[in-house]
Image 1 (cartoon, helix red, strand yellow):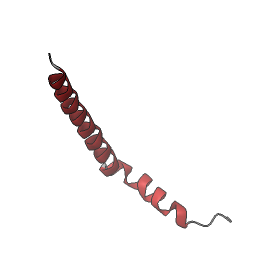
Image 2: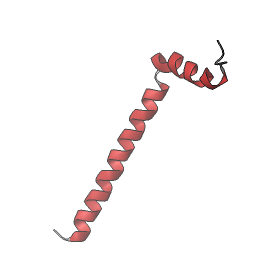
Image 3: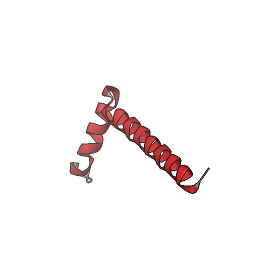
Image 4: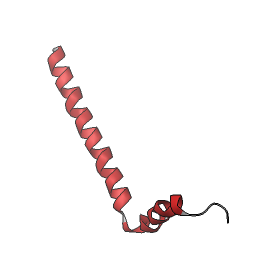
Length: 51
């Protein structure tokens, strides 16, 4: 195998790996059961700390 072949396989593998990780992250963020946790985290900077 030449260097070009190995480099092409590594690039395609990395692209597929990144794509899968990205899709899994999007699915986790948009999953309906996580909606309350993300809504609470979104309001966290607006809450008063003096309570």
